[in-house]
Length: 107
Image (cartoon, rainbow, N blue to C red; front, top):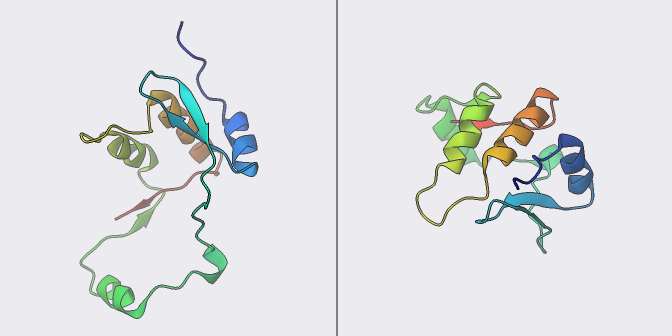
């Protein structure tokens, strides 16, 4: 019996509680809450001057939210230890992206 795909509303509730889903090797979804949890405070985020110089040189094209599903699938296509991203995760996060709740930065 195939597990039920993830529901975006469930993932939103879980994130509010500090949990996030990960695909397990057997196809099930596990829920995790790491301690400590990494958080990027965007209101105080600072680009280091060296990185700012690299960005100004124009060697990289930086886009936001132009290839969300492509980014998800590229992250899922790992050949090493596997990935936490399966098709249910991709579909759920694409739905969250369509709702304006998930974002991608493409470089």
